[in-house]
Length: 110
Image (cartoon, rainbow, N blue to C red):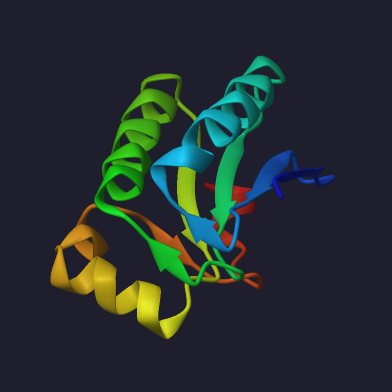
């Protein structure tokens, strides 16, 4: 399931599905496009529910970050589980993606 939540601080949070695989990317990409039409100050992918992720999804996250950054919108990954953080570390994406948590004010003020 993909949900869109707009917060008053103009940060848009999109919730990633439990299985973040290539099959889910089309729906997520649609949510990203819809969010970008509203020109939020920041966009976050909430990965609190993610239990599995594939390489296509990791590549997609980088592509989304590049696309969003070109529009001067901050992009971050929020609430990544320890397992997902390990995947980011092993692939060195922890150095390329902005990681935060639900209480991070960085997203709202970036």
